[in-house]
Length: 78
Image (cartoon, rainbow, N blue to C red):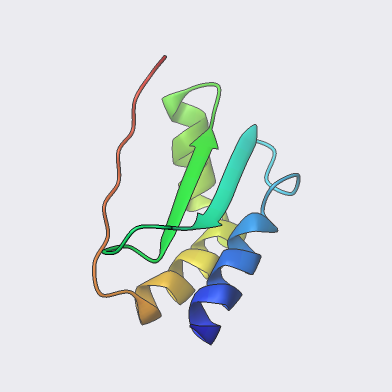
């Protein structure tokens, strides 16, 4: 649980730091099955790709990879 809190704190700290990340919500999941949820908004899929490659995001992503047992992701346009 301490690692999950550290991950969520570091993930939330990316808001306002990585310019392509327009908005994000980071929270603990209230239901069983998943520990955390991230909802993020980007202007384009190109911005999403730049965010994924940003070294600050990569560092947080590596932390997530070191503690997670499963992952799900959905990308959509609206």
